[in-house]
Structure formats: structure tokens, C-alpha cells
Image 1: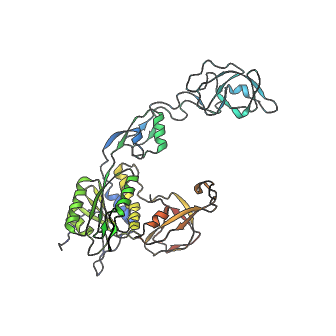
Image 2: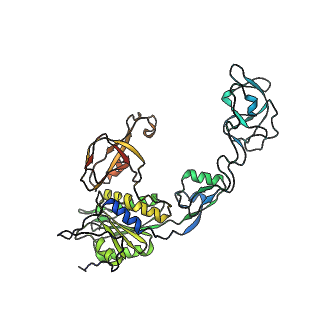
Image 3: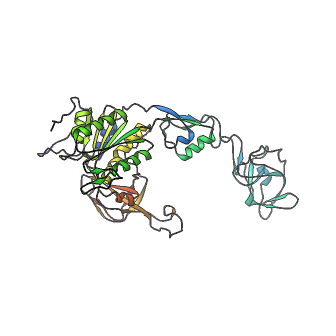
Length: 448
């Protein structure tokens, strides 16, 4: 076996390790690993920019600030079906003593109002209709009673500005809508469409090389013989990458042969912005990750082994500006390591202004059973979510039901991907705890 070697000039952010008598290295804490990763990538160059059509911009990160070229709306509009009025004409109106107005016109949708109502008059108007000159409010249809000969009874007054949206109420001209580094959501695209944006400046999507390792791995279309398993991780990791808006590039399966793995890894480093391999990260005779990375990357490995479960054997390395992640072969372990370390790194490389280096909870829930944990280790536990008063079949969605959000642990081996299929989120047990009790209020984190 060729002798492994470290780069001559190691990166100052590489985690110092202490080896035990068997040559094994202590694992790095989760907090230290995130700090090492964040600091190591702090000098990354920004991604290149490009312009795309509006309908291709969903999920992309803006490469420039976007300012409103005009105000929105440009003209005052009604936000209710009803009658355009002078608000003063309705003052004092009540069901017992209504105010009477003459209906003298109608605002047609998509057209400028023809004429204007005089004092004591009103125009019919629909939601979205342009407000006629002289009017400063809209009386809701529900607060009126139609009489004969075009007479309208108003049974509730309206204040000036009532039930209308004034010019610039939504967006002011030259207002900064989105800062560079913002990720565009569906509602963001709607606002940009409303302001006439047809092409959007965004950062180019990073290409992510994906390699599966192991003599036991075969492609999904094959029937695995005894001792073999189908490649789960490529599909899972490629899906996670694509869900972030990046471009997955599966490079295939490589067996436990150093030269083949080295060639494929070098190909990935030459053509991709980030590289992920799964398997080959544990401390074992057949695992290639550490010794190959030591030979071909500089500054090299920053972290090998993190005090988390699942996902402990993860490798984090860098070759120039290209991050390299060796994820555990077990699917749940790989997904956990991806969520903690690859996700924020890929956000940075995609152009995020503020990558989520620290896991961000999306809510809180009540834990439904006791969970044990080893002190000094951060545990990630998949959970299924429900409500304490879930609706019956055919009623409203559980997420909209009343009651507390409940988290039920979905327990299983780290090799069993079905635990994640049956779960909807993670919870985390901090390293200083030895478990959590049923009834505890816990943060929940998304993993998809």
C-alpha cells in the first residue's frame, strides 16, 4: 500500500487531531466543524453571473440588487366589489338612517373610467377597477342596498382611503426590492412580473460531482447478487442537490480500488464546483477517501469524523477553492451530514448572501417519547409531525388544524432510508444533554 502523506503546507483551519494507540483520531465537535468549514470558505470568489428569463429564475440567487422601475400600482384601484364614492358623502350612514347616493356610472375592468361621479353620486366598481377622479374610497357591496331608479342606500360609512390601494402603496419607484444574494421565491417572481421584469440577473448554478464508492454497489437497474446492494446515495444526493437549485452531475460507481477512485475524483475536481463521494469515509481497510484525498488535494482534509449521530465518519476537505465532502455510505448518515455541512456550503457557492451555516429551526413541537443520547455527541433524530387534534379524513389539512405540533421519533438503523421516507423533519439532541424526555418542547429542522 502506498504511503499516505499530508500536504506540506496545511491549511491553518485544518482541525488538529490526537491519535489513540490504534491510530484512530478523535472526532471534531459539530460547532468546531461548522466554524472550520465557514472560515475555510470565507474567501471564496463570487459565482459568475448570467441573465435568465423570469420563468427560469425560481430558486436562483440574485447577482445584483433589483430596484423598482415604477411604482405599483400606477393608479388608485379598488380592492373590493362595491361603489366608488367621495367618503364624505357616506359620513353618518347607518342601517337606521342610510345615506342615499345616485349610481351615475360604472367602471369597466381593464378600462379607464369614463367621466366622474358628482357630489352625492357613485360609480359601480369591481375589485381591481381604477378609481374614478374625485373619488377617494369604495363602499363595500355588503354595506349597500340597491333601490329603484339607480338609487343606492349606504348603511355603513367609509373613511377616505377605505377599500382602495393608492399609487405606490405596494411598491415605490426606485425602491430596492431584493438584494443581491436573495433567493427568488414564487411570490417574488410575481412581483417582478408585475413590474415588467422579463430577464433576471442571477448567479450561475454550481455543478456538483457525485460519486458512489464500494465493491458492493451496483446500479439501480441491476438485480443485486448476494453481497451487493443497489446505489441509493447517488439518487438521494442528486435530489438534494437539485432541490437547492444546483446541477447534480453523477459520475458513476467506483469499487474499492485506489487508482480508479483517484481518477474519478480528479475528473470531478477538474469539472465541478463541489464534489461529494459517499462511502469511503470510515476508518477501514477498504475505505479510500482519506488516503486518496491526502495524495491529490491541497490544502487537503480539514475534518475527518464529527461528534454527531448519524454521520460521524464524514470527511470535509478542500482542493484550492473546491470543497470536497466524503459522506458515510449509510443513506441516513449521508443525509444527515449533507443537511449539516453540504447544504450551507452549496448555498454559498450558489450565491446566497447569508448561507445558513448554523442549522435553522422551522418551528417547535412536543416530543412524544423519551430519547437517550450519549454526552458529548449531537444526535439527529428523524421525526414524523402531526397535530394534537388532527382532523378526520376529508377535513382540513393537519398543518392547518388547531392544537400543538407533535414530533414522533422515527427510529431505525442508519442504513435504513425508509426512516427518512416516513419522517418529515429532524430534531437535534445537543451534545451537552444525555437525552430528551417525552413532553419536551423541541426545535424541528427540515432535511429536504
